Structures are given as C-alpha cells and as structure tokens.
Length: 290
Image (cartoon, rainbow, N blue to C red; front, side, top):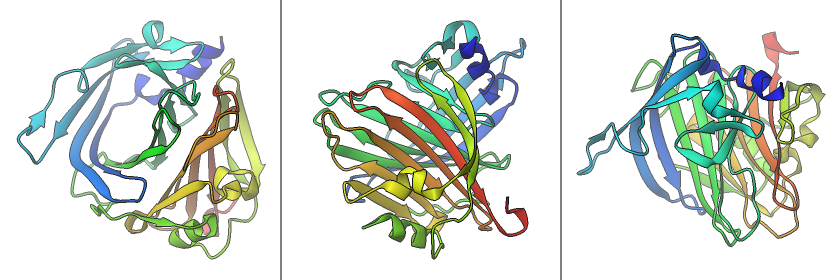
C-alpha cells in the first residue's frame, strides 16, 4: 500500500533524535515577534515501527519550562494510528498532514488551502546527523501572509556548533537577491537530485536533473515575500497574498556552512486549494558535485 511505503519514510520509527531547537517567528515585514528554546524528542517504540514524541519549551518569561499540555505531548505515533492515505497524521493536529520524503525532509501542512480558511506549512530539511531546520509559512483566512518562522535544531545542544542565535531577518526583492544572500552569484547549474511525493495517492518519485528554473524560487515573482536569515544562509519564500483560483507554493532553501550543498524543500497547492505535492531537491558541487 502507498500509505505503508510512505510511513517507511518516517525516520523516527527506528531512529532516536533529541533535537535542541531555537524558534524564531517574524511578521511578514521581517520584524521579530517570538523567540524561545525548545527540545523535540523522538524515541522509537520497542516494536520498531513507531515512536514516542515529546516537546519541551523553555521560555524566558513567566512561563518558564513547559513540558506537558496539548503542545507538548507526549504522543505515541504508530502506523495504525497515524499512517493514512492522506499522509502521516500527527495526534496533536488532525486537520494537518505530513508528507515525508526519504531521509526525513518533508512538510507538515494543511491539505487544503482554499481562501477563506487559514493555511500553514512547516518545511523540514536535514544536514548530516546533527543538524535540522524547519521553516514555517502561515497565511490568514483572507489569504494574506501572516507569519514566517525558522526553527534551528542541533542534536548536540545549544549553543549550536552549526547554527547561530541571530534573530535578524530581512526581506529582499527577488529570487536573485536570495541566491546572493546564500553566497551564490548565479543560480545552480546542472540538475538537482531528490524526491517528490504527491498528495493524491501518496505516489513517490525519484527526481534527477531538475533544473533550477523548475523550483519555486526559480519561478517566484514579485507576488512572493523573500525572507533571508544571513547568518545561517537560509531563505524562506511565501506567497504575499493567496488568490482564489490560483496555484501557489511555499519553500525553504538552505546552504549550510561549508557551501558544498544547497537544499530545497517545497510544498505546492492546486488552484482550487488541494495540496498537490511536496518536493525535496539537493544541488552539490565542488568535490561532491553530481
């Protein structure tokens, strides 16, 4: 079954991860609104086909450390409870779905983005065993961009050896300016390698030789907001205004320290609102060029 094959992409079925996270949220004009530390802990079940997830928040205000409640869990995730024909359903949010790709990248998002209801997506990328990031793009029911977020995670704890603690972000005017902020004078040449999973039927496809112009950032026009976090070479791209009857996408691009890899993850919705697909692509160059 497609749902079983898709569930096998969920790495936390068999791998333990204790992510130490730094969460930042910004308004659409890139003003910081929220920052705090957290831990996202995944423990595989003895069955080898599920996990227990627990989130602990560390706030600098009167809330202090929060380790229980509706946003903390813990939750038990099994194939029987969470692997569905629409994706992986998290126990904390039945109205959202996760489409996950081999190795762990993916998107947790609303499966329907009709204007008139809110739309949110959290896009995940990994680098090696120790570093992960996710980018949040949230739209209000009227279709306007409401919030952008970056969660930087390291299994080794904080301060992180791979991430800064900068809360500074800025908007740039174009995709070319995003690439410049990532330290690239021109768009990547050659083809990206990766995977795609379709929302309808959870069909998975290996991707090879994908031209940069086929990515969201390669196609995005002035209708998108381009936010860059220079210290960590991350770009987050979201539609400024969702329009009724028009397809749209959200994306995150990351060039980790070292500069030999460029990661991209995208979620695309159809004109009528349904989620179409999630894609993960990697460009490598230098000694690792493909």
